[in-house]
Image (cartoon, rainbow, N blue to C red; front, side, top):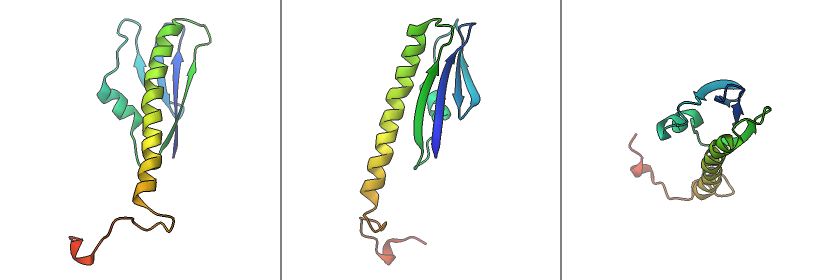
Amino acid sequence: MEKNINLIMDTEKKIKININNEEKHIIYENNRTISADKIYELINFSLGDHYVITKENKSKIDEPVLDFFYELFNEIINKINSLEDTTENKIFDNNNEPDFPVEPDDIPF
């Protein structure tokens, strides 16, 4: 599933983080931090997800700050997107069958 992450700098210098057009988090001017746990929660990765990131700053306020958070998220989602592509290719061959041997006695159920 495609997930769209949009970072929006508003006129009050708050950065709103929207996922698929739904506001999920705000980074306030007086505390320009976000934890790794919060990023993990926001991304909410599932195999098959593909991420796209955009940024908006219509008033051109604090552009370097928005750029920093944009680059942070962009680097993370680029790695996730490439991980998803390589993981899928390693597990399945062209016939959509597992590349690793699975014997009936190896299955615990």
